[in-house]
Image (cartoon, rainbow, N blue to C red; front, side, top):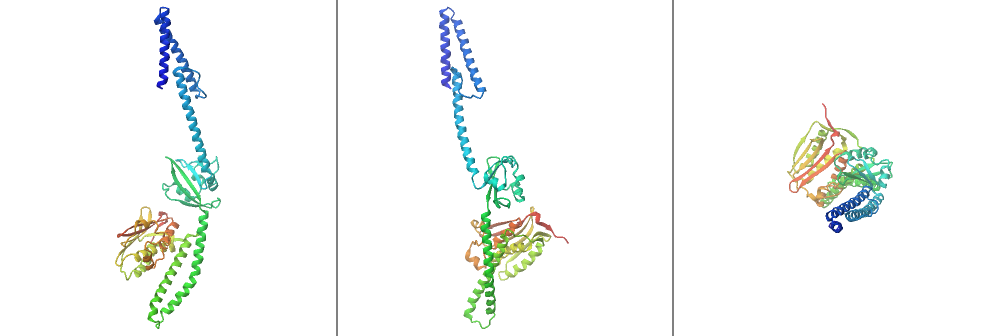
Length: 432
């Protein structure tokens, strides 16, 4: 800018000197100075007027042929405009390349604004969700994807988890959905085809069921013969210990087969809950009778905190399986004379079943994997206790099927707390 002003001041100086010289020749130096000033000012205003007119028309094309500071202004605007044009073209190319890449990505992508209206979607989202362009642009996503589980998810504030949606009319009959923040106010809905994973899970489930049924027959025969041999009073002493170990392993295999069958039935897509009004206090009472018998030699201290009027709309067999797994686990892993607390009551807007012990506790790095099938913190200890490694996996599946959650807290040397919370919509009050 200093260059432009320098040239303009030079022009002004030349005009004033010229006017002063011409005026002096005619004996009127001041009049010559005034006249040259007016001519310079008129020329400057004319040039600026042409530049302003060019700018008002959007500064299209090259600037007008003017001189002085007006020429400098026009040239600076023109150069900046060319740089901006190049930048816009480069950005437009990048955006176009990005959109082409996103359009062909195998996962469905839907960009939502802060009102959950669709701003953009790719080809996969069009196929998976049945979206139409441009008709569905600026439409609310929950008005177009009419799945109750998706509606509840998209309207909730918690998007840290993924959901699965069954859509038989789509090419992806099973879809995994996740919402992620995008920018300051937008959200990105990601839809993945989970059909192959479901087919593999079904194959695995069918294999487990078939294999477990095939194992049941030989185990039943072995258990029958073991019972006959154990009752034989003439059995040599050197065979008693090996036969007891065999009987113990047969019983463990039988529990494993039963747990595998139960877990497989919970994982089946066509599994249906046999929902009835379950008297949970009565269920816990019967469960605790078994717990006292199991704990008799270890003399555990049991503390019960049971809301006697709180029932649950649920599958009785599944809920009993989840609760018994938690209680029996606490008995197996809590040292003799340890304390086990069993609670059932309202916590906020949920009904929660809690089992707490003062056993050895579990290290933090294991907590996130405890409900995986066959995952053990201490393999030898779990086998010695007769565990199958499937108990917590069964508990988690029972809770998921009932719309609840399993929460695990533990601290080494302090103990563990397992909490099953059922949604308030399943809570009922006992009458009479």
